[in-house]
Length: 352
Ligand SMILES: NC(=O)CC[C@H](N)C(=O)O
Image (cartoon, rainbow, N blue to C red; front, side):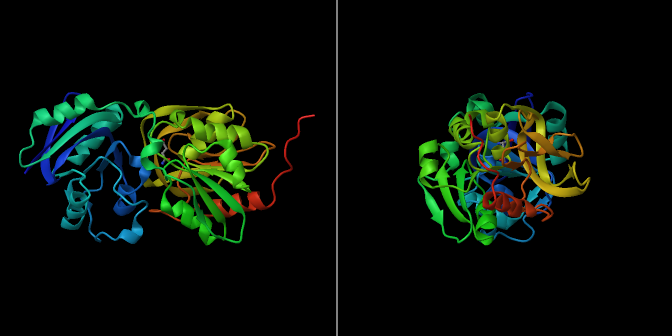
């Protein structure tokens, strides 16, 4: 069974269909060598086509207790070789899967030309034309203006706890972010991505937490308005898209990266301690200007902002994934720091 990937650079790559169907999205790659269940269920991959640079994906099976959300999130999955387990899982989810392609070549192309749009057709009747038609219909990531609606909860959800109240704006939250907070005793109020400041105020938060999520942070205007409203009054935290949204709201700017950071071994330097930790990452945008925040951690490879803190206000964010699923546990302490900030906040800024 054949499969075709039509790339925005004009090439059509032929592979083997492991799960039939058509799909389109921004072609990105991850260098993660484990954690395929977590990556494939990470809502931040919505509207993307995920290529694994590691050649064999699926060698320890598929277990749903490792899932980060209830469904597979990328539109298409690509690898050098998927095991039968993974191929069956993707087929049962209706997600086209392509293997038998030279992923070294595909990844080199993305590194040289940037993450690009693509269209895919896979299955017994698939043709290169179908893949090209998909490509024609494929829009850029920033054009998915209401992408939050695809990945957020429909209404509020509460996770009981005896510790600080965390109001999590779910822009496509990974399950392990909620788990990390609940394990530490937090009472988590999970609200939809478009919650208003009044809805957030109703939960009486000790900390407002903006989650990870797919696409361009510029499209998460409601979450930005929440940060705008509460900054200086209530501690603010954020992970990945959350860091980007927080920075944009507090005078900063984000920009699209050429091909982003996706993998489990991204080195991050803490500027205060000079300590380097290994982190899990999945992002295609970065904070180019931190605005009124201070950059406290940077990526060792390219110096992009990996951690931000407020100056005189309680703000703590990370561009990488401290929840560490999959990936090294070096950065789990972030959640302790966020809850400590919630427990003893700096007195609110008063305007007199
Ligand atoms: N994991 C995330 O939250 C990703 C954030 C954003 N969608 C990006 O690509 O940069």
